[in-house]
Length: 161
Image 1 (cartoon, one colour):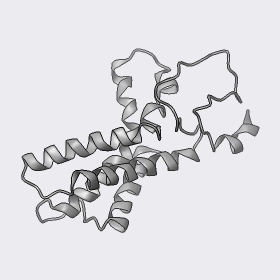
Image 2: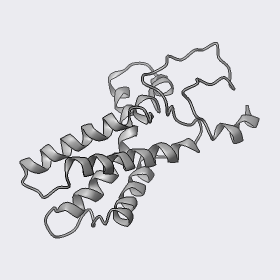
Image 3: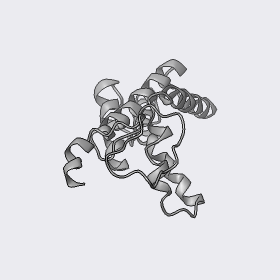
Image 4: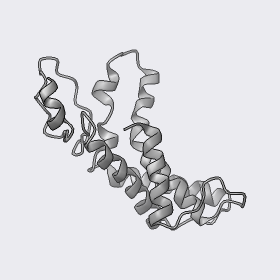
């Protein structure tokens, strides 16, 4: 799934589940808008791993790096708490009313989890149990999967190999 779709899904979850408000409302930033923005940013955060491509000369980096550590259920609490801390600091500096640190952590966790779950059905899946990046092994052919990978989409795509 593409990053824009993940962002839209996150914003919709924020509005539907957490009573978030419009992201681009005419009134000043308030708690409801921060909720919607946080869920949207949480939902697109796992795709931030592609930023590494800017600094690399490896044309195949996206194959070994994308959908690895940022798509991990094990690392999800760390990412959620890190993003919550950044949001709280940013909001307090600007004197905005923001949800508590714990609430923001939960909101970011829901956004990140929505991204991971939506990517499970997409080929090649997501490395939901990975703590680091596994180097590509060129000797592996299609059909060999890392234990940390959960490619739900591979079931339907396997016949194309």
